[in-house]
Every structure is written in structure tokens, then in C-alpha cells.
Length: 101
Image (tube, rainbow, N blue to C red; front, top):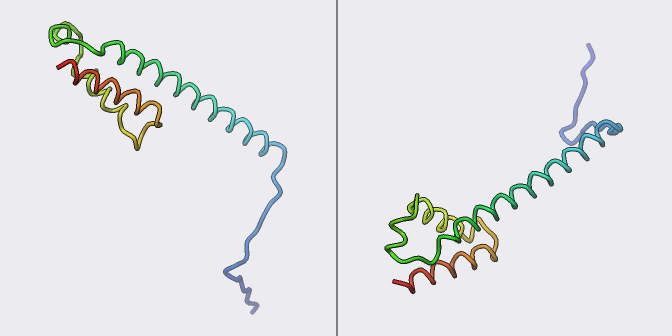
């Protein structure tokens, strides 16, 4: 009877072929494209939200979905989720709105 010993530190490796490398390149391109589209979509959404500010209470009563607009504005102000430029711009709009009363 023969026994085979496999050491815990051993591993196998393979050399990736041209198909694997091409696949990785295509995946990286797709990821970069989606990231870019996400940024464009986010910038357009932020611009749409910003168009509603600042406003008076009377103007706010005529705006459709004002609650959702405020929700989105507060979402864009989250420093743990968005970069410093977006958060700073959003907070400036919030302060301008507070200043209006």
C-alpha cells in the first residue's frame, strides 16, 4: 500500500494562456467603462437635484417629488460614500438653503 503526503504549503500553478489574458483585458475594459458611465449618470443626477436649490417654501410646494429631492441631496452629502468634491458641493447647497430660511 502506498501513501502520498501532501504538504500544506504546496500549491499548483498553471501558466495562463492567451485566452485567459484576453479575457482579463476585456473584463478590465468593461469595468472601466461601467465605472465611467456610473460617474456620468451620478453627475447628471446631482445636477438635476441641484437645479431645485435654493428655493423658497412657496417654490418648494410647487416642486414635484421635493421629498425625494431632499433625500437625494442628503445622500450626496455622505462623506463615506462620495468623494470630497461632491460632498463639499452638496453641503454648500444645503447651507445656502438653510440660509434662505
